[in-house]
Length: 433
Image (tube, rainbow, N blue to C red; front, side, top):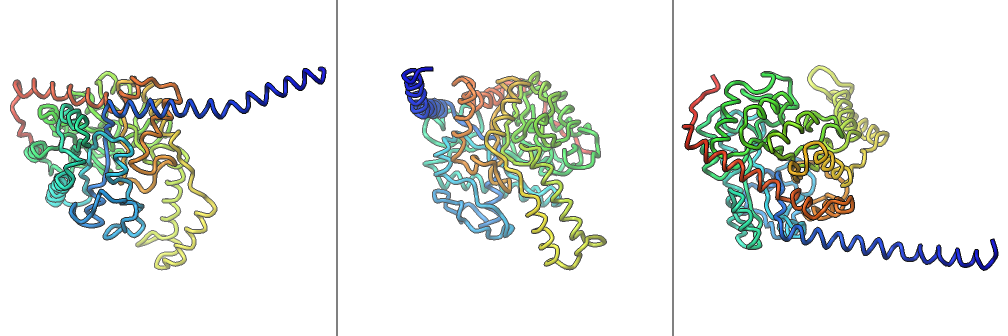
């Protein structure tokens, strides 16, 4: 090759290299503009946020915290000293272009039923007080129309989901009163089985739903309350999908084909969700996103048990300093796996691939998880996830379905089913016995 030709080739290569960052920047800017437009025209609906419980634990009530300020610096207060920074406040919700939020009203599944009902009512009250305190930012919503109206008026629609069927105290009358107070979904279990449904993370007692559990699903259909299958066992998922005549939801779950965690949804169940016209709302909870993190977390829990497991076992029982030092040494040898925004996008794409674009949404689980994927640290980060999907060649129409279009459709179909069933079916007075 002659010197002149080599010089020309070098010049062309240098020019191409110099242009590439500009082209990449232009493409990124174009994706950001697309996402901003999608979220401005379609309400971004997050299926699950545990801020009410965190408020209760840290400061006691909604009037004792200013959600217009940066809550990430709020002390743990009455919560565990190791509680992570809060992930949600109004400025971050606004920056994240959130259009609607299902606030979870969770209480521990270990508390007695009467206590669980009292605490659930207090959590419902906390959400109402929180919304009333910030009328320029929040508006209570109970329907798809309410969400769209709030979004058009520049408000964040606030909805309520009860997380755990133990909170109804085995009473369909209590279920109906929760609906009257604005609850629009209920997660059938939390981490433990209850008297009528099996959890994904407990030893099966019923191998799915009991006859009363099926009555709970039917009554939820009649009311128009969405049946939430996050946290339930696969047998419970299948039973609920067989019984429900309205679309079901998974308010915060991932794809089990990517992370083999029992809290995630198998491909077989995803196919059933597609037939049901339901929705799986992809979670940011790290153990349900990353297989490596899931295994690391299980190994770490086993190691904690090995060092200090009262009352009969444990290498360092009664020696907390030695147990802590041993755990610190283990942590140094076994660094926590990194979980990323791109991994969450992988779950979303898998759910889409198996169940279809009409059956996927977002359910962060912010303020209900000890840590988050890198890039999804708080309620201001949703646009970054949508930009990643745009980079993966998602169309604006598909991004809008993910953001909130699918959930609006599910809510409307469930409302139509309820309107029909209320004309045909009286309220149920079934009991767990």
